Image 1 (tube, one colour):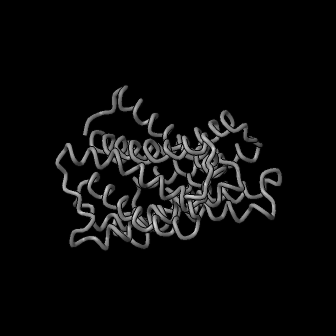
Image 2 (image 1 turned 90 degrees about the vertical axis):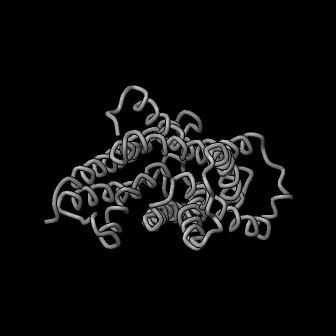
Length: 295
């Protein structure tokens, strides 16, 4: 590991921008595509740069090895379910709300890690951070300008998607001895296998007459927000470690709100800003709490 330099901070910011841009691009993709097809094409296009990098680095892809069940399970829980749920939910809510809701992932991870890992137990400071962050989420749901009876469950579905990301991350620890490129490529392959028949059966994509902007957004989601973003993540993890890379969690909801306003003219209410601040401060306190012993 090395001390982060200007390039490292630039790449971290770039990663946050790419990941946060996924939300408004998913929204645009929903104008023409169904949620299953969006998830399918996202993992398909996302696998392309990873397959290329594995080929040139001569990394063996173990999607169908003796550990295939782990790759299949992680692909379903960490990619299929959240990608589908986000695309399904974001159709009825603003993309900036999805960015804030998905930012709760580190908070959910704190709770689940306490029960399912040995070294990530919750303590007083972490508890305060979790309560503050989720308090911000609950406060967001009281915004009558953005939420009503017809779309509030869409927001809950997006929140559920963040939990599946965490569960998938915990399962990934079971095969942490394998290279990141191999694991990610393998789970993308399995996600494609799961989603292809579902898309063909339920959404009949051959009948679509998609808008150009939806198609461009979908290709961007796969190649950049999935494939390239994961490669950037690998680079940052390798050179600067998990703690530095985890700081991306502070930037994603901020950029998500800004990009939703710039590209989709989405409303930013005072409750959105308060919720955003509560989630970011909650994540910060949780990260600080990781330095303290269990109380």
